[in-house]
Length: 197
Image 1 (cartoon, rainbow, N blue to C red):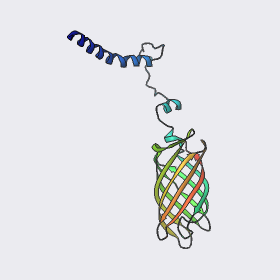
Image 2: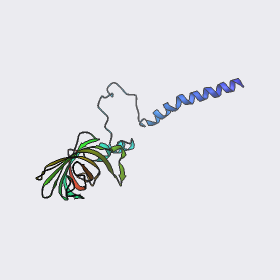
Image 3: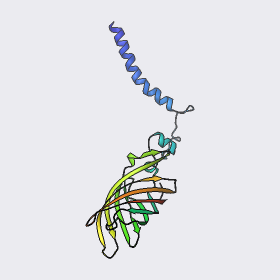
Image 4: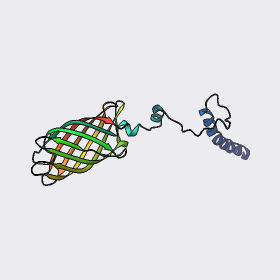
């Protein structure tokens, strides 16, 4: 009785030791040979995009361009506020890291309003759409108007980037100015990607 328990325990320990070795041997190429000193290399191993995706690693944080510049339109809801004017817009994104970006924009109507938020990009919360990713962000900064009564207001922004292709990124952003006049607008545009993914 004691012998059979010892044999059972020994067999269990042996299987624990053999299983990792068997898995390692299975992962080796079928023509594996004992490496020689000349076979050893210090060159870095390059993984393809397919291999990276299998490991759960995405290209530059969900494939969103680090930088873009483009055009769009600002839909304003309060003409008396800093960001409330509707008009043509020039948009941009300049990344400091995968998560932090500066997003300067200029809204052109009868005057020019500059919107400069610093945003945090939620790359780990990207939403998959087809084979691309919608990446939301939030941020804060300043809004500066250049009309006769030049005004500087605080700014809260929230939006999302969506890559239309490797060359273009669609962007939507809601802006709330906080100052003498509180205003709200929605800025929509398309940017040309530059600086790599």
